[in-house]
Length: 265
Image 1: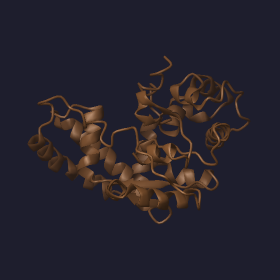
Image 2: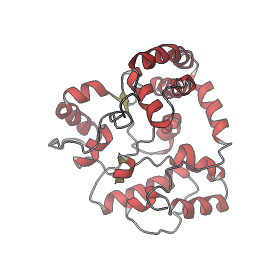
Image 3: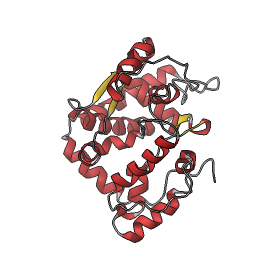
């Protein structure tokens, strides 16, 4: 919701498509780069570049086929492409919203000059339930466990950088979008008047339109209360331990996200 409003109100640029429920995630640092051996060799970079050009994300940028930017730094590479797309579309800023990029907060601050990271904090039950309904099976508790662990990892790392980033409550955003969007806009680009346009995408698109009988509130509450024990076990684990473990796992990626070529397959 927040990223969609930022784009729809002209505050920042990001590729958008209805098949991706509005603002599209790139998964660039979390999924794409690890799949292509970490952007290490020139061969890795060329293979990544020509594969990335065929993705929904790149094609929606509308900048056409480009030569590989002259950079051995994956952060500079991505910023170059995004800056070109933002400029072409008349924006002075761009945004990227992949949740898994929470795992790279330290690297983003160290490698992207002037980067601003926004942490949208939301009710934990809504977060886990949304992900279970979007990417799992609500009737199987293992999916509640999985997304409780994932949410715990993201929140633990974001919490450790909370003093450097802009934090906004999702619930406050829903209650008073004009005020919260104005404050966020001022933080991101400074002094811009904001006229709120209603977002064309559902707040809870992952489970807001369920078939009758698919949602079981009692079951969901029970599974959530059990799974959030895992969330807190992860949340109180040192952030550097979590980052190390997940980065090791990312090196084992054997495929790109299923939606990577969804529109332009």
